[in-house]
Length: 422
Ligand SMILES: [Zn+2]
Ligand SMILES: [Zn+2]
Image (cartoon, rainbow, N blue to C red; front, side):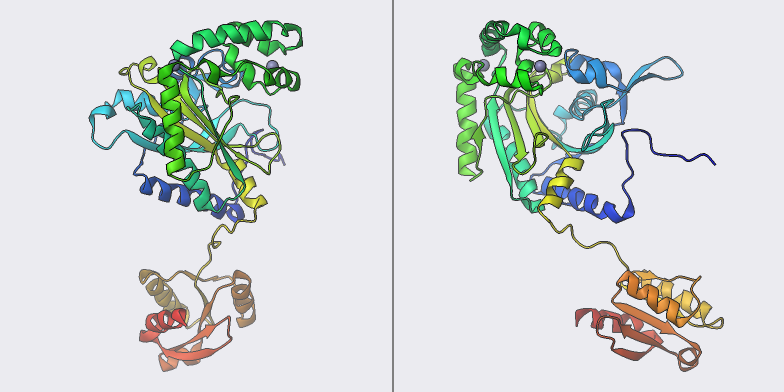
């Protein structure tokens, strides 16, 4: 028989792991409530032009990593490689800037990149993110950063560092690009082949290169912060002031550039200080032209995204408790043929009253059923045999204390609720 496997670079989230994912999702949604962000759900595929126009064709994503395909009518589509462009597409298409309470959006879901699979990097990966569209006020930048910070704290994470930077606007970038080109040209032969192309099209992206040689050279490259114009300087220092007032610790890292073309001014990352090279938990920044590029007004936005997979690693490294694994409160033990209809009735009634109950009709003996109840770690067993049926009773056993009592059948719910409290 042929054996089937998940496609290369993808994985299953199994029941024994899924409660950890739910813990992250739940904590993220709680944070969205605190900051009043509302969910937006976009399709997992879009017209590929959305990404080509916005993400920029010098980025690795569009050049090499996008899952592009034609549908039966020959439309050029792509599985979304990131979340921001689809959200902005929808924002523009639905005129959300005119609707109340619609500038603050969050999303959760799978993204796709045709990357070489390696530890912690997958072709289908899961991201959470927020976007705040329409204001350039530095308070918004600080609040978006605060959201990310708060979220990680709520999860229980300890060892992370917030790094911020300003990559300037179009006005200040011109001079900076010239300075960068001049600097890197002196080291042209030492750069990787990708960076040689980048240097022509978008020299800032050389700063972002993960190749060791390029990294070493980039260390002494001119700093964007020395090229900020007055507006960008004021904007950046306001953010720092707000963050300090909110008691959010940060460091300035002038090497953060963000990989995508549409970013301007604020860029930030939160890194796990325990992880090695691949240590970015959350990356975010302000985008000035994206809304316009996708057919909208001349407004800017700011957002961030983070991946579930790496966050999960960080949480496991720090031995975070992910909350309780899902298990039933009650295990129902049915003894015999004559009791089974009454059993079904009781089980159904428990669930109607919000008490979770597990029953295995394939286990017959008392022993087998009690064993399974123990394995599942339930607190209560309800046991119904011929005697109990006759007396209109049932046995309620507390599996933790081994105490048991006979309960009248119309008092089961009450008895369980009372015992739960003790
Ligand atoms: Zn500027
Ligand atoms: Zn390079």
